[in-house]
Length: 293
Image (cartoon, rainbow, N blue to C red; front, side):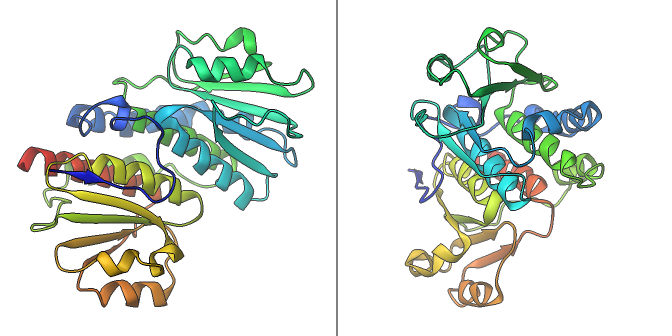
């Protein structure tokens, strides 16, 4: 029986990537690299980031909450402005926001629409979605349409949002679609034989991605998966790691944390690829584990 625990950034009310009860089908993973190319060609990230120096609230529902939190952390790390991300059903509308960014995965989540209707009139509203059936339009001052995925994976949508924002922040990302293709077509499997416990560890804007990836991995039969912020694993998490564990790090990893992780006897993977490519690799692993069960 599989188990899933996510100590941080738990996607609220989800049953798996894309709202499914299991890992993403391989065709949807294969559709991510061309989708990333379309996103980079659109160059919509400046609108998503909002004015530099503005205080922004980012709202999302369900499985897009980790993407909202990652975007908020990324915006602050790059000194774009104070940013918070909250579930759409807990918008804290009394705070002094300059603008609100509403991230939607479909026609319009009820809690997201409700929050937009009840924001103070002075707050600038901006919506972002990949759904042509969106109902956000009348409720926002500006609507940004991301390219619609060929196949409707929410992993494609959340990665597209972050890809677009990072490009607007000046990162060179044209190589990432090729890197994702290499991960998906490699003969070497991502999964590790004999593993029953997986911990995904992220830092900064990658910490929420660690949470959503752990959720997908934890849906594979016989796998217990969890996620942590990098330094957090010193407070009990490593006590449960050992032979049969995989500790997969995303983002920056201090040397002392790596040494402590290796001392447990667990398999330790230091993600050398871009965090979004690492996320694709994790979803490939979830697919492999589910297929092998």
